Length: 126
Image (cartoon, rainbow, N blue to C red; front, side, top):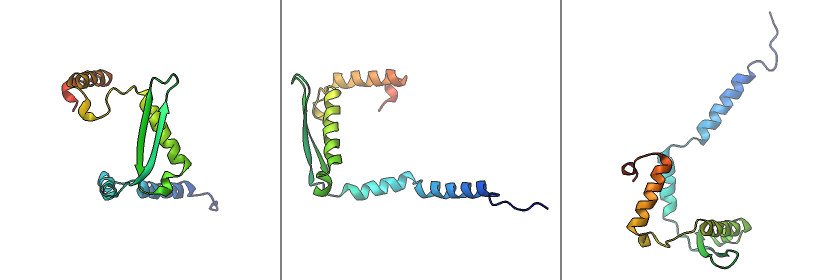
C-alpha cells in the first residue's frame, strides 16, 4: 500500500477553486442590464472639459466628459482619459457633430464600407 503524498489531489482542488472563481465572476446579461438601469438614473453633474489642438492648428477638439462626483473628476487618471478621448476624436477626422447632422448619403457610404469589411450584404446591417 502506497503512502498518500501531500500533493495528491492537488489538481482536483485547484480545478474546484477555479470553478468557484468562474461562477463568482460570470454574470448573466440580465444582471448587467439591471445594473446599468440602476446607474442610468444617477446624475452626472461633475466632470471635466479638455481640448486638443493638433499640430498646425487645423484640427481642434473640445470635449466634455461627465461623472458622478468631483472626487473622480479631479483625479489625474480621469483628466488623462478626457484628454485621450479628445485626441481620439481628432484622429478619427469627424465630419459631423451630432447624429442629426449626418446626411443620408454619408450614412449610406458608411454602411457600405462596414458591410464590405464584414463581408455581409448591406441589407443585413441595422
